[in-house]
Image (cartoon, rainbow, N blue to C red; front, side, top):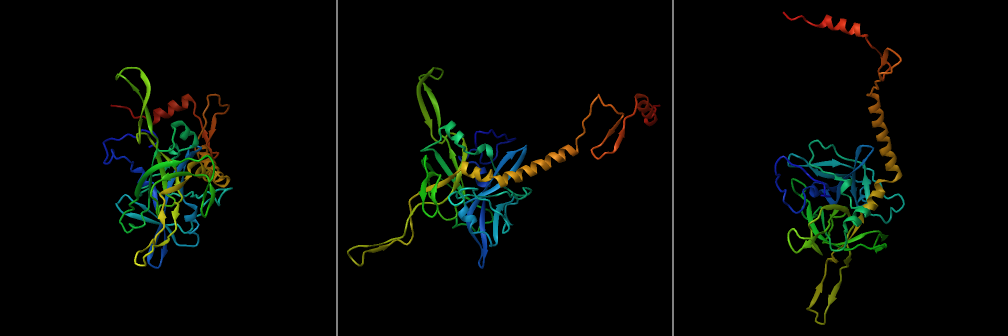
Length: 348
């Protein structure tokens, strides 16, 4: 993941899987209480950013999903370490949207993170974000492998969250806005992967393709030719899933009345737009959330200073003070040796 090395005391189960378990552990399921129980409708995932030496965690999902949650009994379900799930009540959760493009950036974030004690939850580090600079550095583009993890709405009644993982490819990285119905002109990447209800808001990862130089002999000089190792690179967080293009249901009638066929469901084109990671970061770095982080950083700084004392050999007074103003008298050498003799026991 992201080229960062991971070290283990012993080889863990599943270490040779093509896709890291981190991908499944970073997602949560979003649902709403109704008369029949809980209706699960989407996916969210956890990320973190580091600022001022502190880690700040955020829950990310799709704006069109968050728009349905206010005023409802919203819940977020995550796995715990006992082999079951924890259902977190989240009806009071406040969501932040893009500061200037909230209507066309389908992203919502909330600076919340359940206490990690007892929960099997992972956050995607900011070092794994596929920023424009990283995309240019690794040549990420059309044809590179992508995979998504999220809610499969047909399988929800399980003891643990069981995210479905689907794979595909980048098919377009436009340098202009694309018109997506019901939203408008959006900044997006397009990927080819089957999407369905429940995957809205899920994380989308990309694995860059590695190029290795070829030589005529094992130790010989490079020939100028390269071998492309498809799917052989590191994985990065490309963005979050918006939805999919579909062909609406239609009814086809042929000449014979008995030869009629009806399409009851919309036809999925298999192309899905993605909110780029740099747009998600614009939401996380909007002024209001930046100000909240600065308050936390300043409080942490004051706490550190309250427990620190600066010592110097050039002190002009024989009396030191604690941060609370209490005096600490400094003994002379004779006083120290005298006190030491009083508390020392003589050996027989």
